[in-house]
Length: 427
Image (cartoon, rainbow, N blue to C red; front, side, top):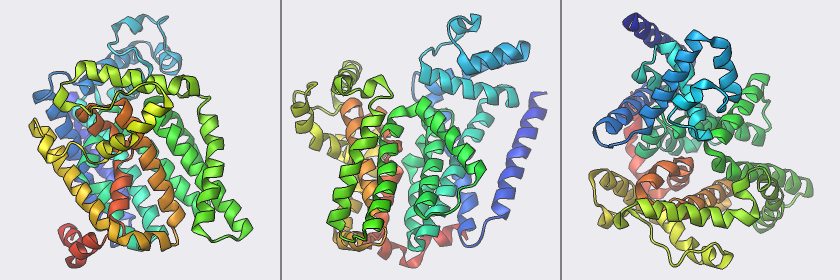
């Protein structure tokens, strides 16, 4: 029975993605299968890494809890549905679960749905998760190219092929489903920016994405929403005022930004102004207590005060963007992270030559919004999560956007792509 169900699920996935590919237009669809297969392979590799490299793997705990909930669904479907919606310690199944923390349990609930579909098959569930994230990223890439066709290489490379982005948004982990939601919300934002019609189904999926991302990675949304709402509002205001000055647009942006930021600060206890700095420092200290010194970002007397945090922001920003460096490597996985970081640093330095092109771009306020989102989320994550290993996973919340910025209109990338190696690879 397990084999038959596995074959049915694989056949279903192949049919779905073949149908999606068939409806895509050339030349973009040439990237479809290489990017999809890479994504599915990354999800399998994630499971193998957690099996043979890490001593503890939360991906398998999500599966174990998902199997427990799925078994409840097979025996008492009404109780299962009730637990999915409002599960708490009043349910007998509660004490059987390893993860009782809300965000981890939320992913276990999602996993349980796929456990029912696949008869608890980890590898096929991983393919479902990876496939969902891939298609969400695919939709975003298509929308970016619709908005700005010359951005094709940057969009494809950053969202579909950049190694860390592909790996840490695949398989049964929170980042996989959370980033699927964030990519889709980014697509809707760009449609709103272009004043394209947003269909009813897209609104429904957008609301579902908001709910999922908030429950899995609320701090992504706590920065993403103020940035995108501010960007849309500032565009509307500056257009009505018929002001084209970049300085004026940026000033308007910052004047508006405070409003959604204050709203967000009221919807989660960790973002209350009185608690935010304390949460950052407490989280930092917890990671220090369980990490080796060579795996840590060390700050200068970090305290829960505005002055202390401001003093440490430059180091947090540099570390979050470009560390660990190759000179700081202490294990094989760190080497690959450092290799990527070195490439990002080189891209950044080469990209400085094209700063005038970015400033004069017709989409400069969109690029400014990406910069602000990246800087804010990077700083927050680096301060609160100083462990290099954990940070390399968490930072996928901004990493594809950072890579997109560094490769867009980058003269080094443009020169490299004159022979079109990516296009030759996928054709």
